[in-house]
Length: 436
Image (tube, rainbow, N blue to C red; front, side, top):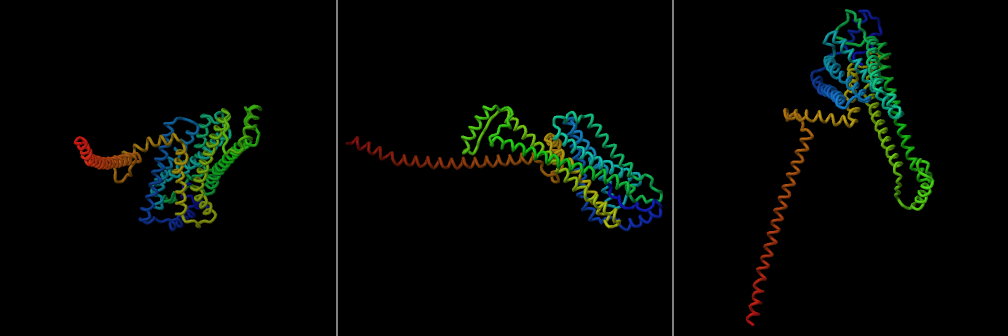
């Protein structure tokens, strides 16, 4: 997974061959210009922060919700991605900027070991989560007996052992003394190609895509079967309702024949309708799982496929791919650790509530400390908006009261004026009557 794994070990392990490769490497890798470093540092810092804090939310969510089979797998995914964000990405950022290794041989080995182990663990965990969801959809009655907490813990231990095994088989620990410490690489090219590419990318990707396609087809077939069940009702066949008697069937058929001209028919059979509603809810759950796995498969291929494509191309054609291209595609693969908590965890309703309880107070504190740099939190924005709306409404009511008062004053003035005009004539008539 590391960005310095290239075709540098096709020749012998002698110092002469390595010195020749060092000369070639020194001509290809130079320090990036300062404006480009400043420009690239902004998205790199954003990726690191999102990876660290996003996966911290996953770990925090696991601690609040509890230990279930799915949350254990998601927690393991968040742990591996969190370690990628806190160990691999900061050192990789310096390596990308300076185009050489400046931290010595020991940290080089630590960085490469963390890169291979944590990225492999993340990829394999994605594959295991897809298997878990596939069993939950295809074996709903036997799922609790098939997938127990003990088995999940054993699978998690196996994942870390498998990642460590790939590390031990790909990392070259016996570097000769004549080798330059400014380079940081994974090890033997052929071993890395055989283990890392096959077992850490192509095999998990194939399993994830295959299971996604099977879940998608299963959801579509069940939806069609349920739709055919409604068509069976409308086609004078009552086999869909297992608890319906023949007398009820004849009454329903006569009801349907008498109401063919009506556009809407409502049939109530209590438990049967509730059973169909339950089946529809299950189908919606299956469709949501299929969509989630589809997004997972697409993001996984989008992030890691360019790196492994360029890696294989560079292995077959040495020097055809610029080193900076492989470095950038490796960072695109690191972005998969940033997207994983968004894809998996934000689809869980409890995670959203847990994330809001943690993020919103922190956001408000940062806004109070740095109001010019931090944007306004949604809660305060909604509060201010409601305050402005209430104030505008009160002002509008006050103006309407003033207008109503003016109207009342005008009407009362007109009435009093009219009374003043009519009263003398009445009195005059009365006086005339008295005189007569």
